[in-house]
Figure 1 (cartoon, rainbow, N blue to C red):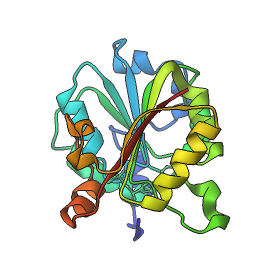
Figure 2: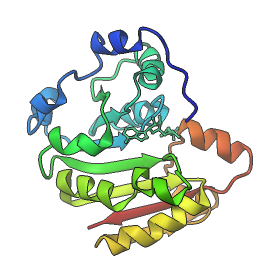
Figure 3: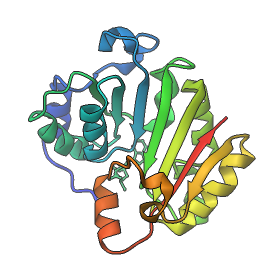
Length: 211
Ligand code: SAM
């Protein structure tokens, strides 16, 4: 994502009532924060959060946590959040590599990765959110039967993910090379990037995996 730093964004995030400021302190206590025992889904790299906020509105019996490492990007999501009355969503401004500090094993029921940065150069492969090191982090926090759902328009990143995810011991439960023309499209909620790329006619790839 092209990023322009917004002056004051760190301060705005630090004082936002919609952001959990010290997520390590919630580790093991997220259900208490939500005030219910509903399952928790997270989006890693949520950008401006359209997907998460729409899901939260549609599914009051789920809890949602949007994770974005850049304050300038998260800030744009918080502007939208202010207009909505949603009791079942929080945001974290952290790097996904540290998620094991914020959640105990089994606390997360579903992980969404949407249009993750492709990092096409081999020397940057470790930064891809479906790389083996990140899969280890997801393994640390995901419930036993929990799922990982990944959408992208990037053929290279999808092919890479279809290889490394099974190699790391996960099963691909379902996948499509053209989500918008497949049975998997039912109930699909679009992300910001998905709206942009599908409008250009790019096919959208999706996979669902479980350990
Ligand atoms: N998911 C959104 C969508 O589909 O519209 C945004 C996609 S955008 C291309 C990818 C986002 O992931 C960026 O906002 C980026 O800052 C975030 N991101 C990348 N690596 C991350 C990491 N290690 N931890 C948290 N966020 C990350």
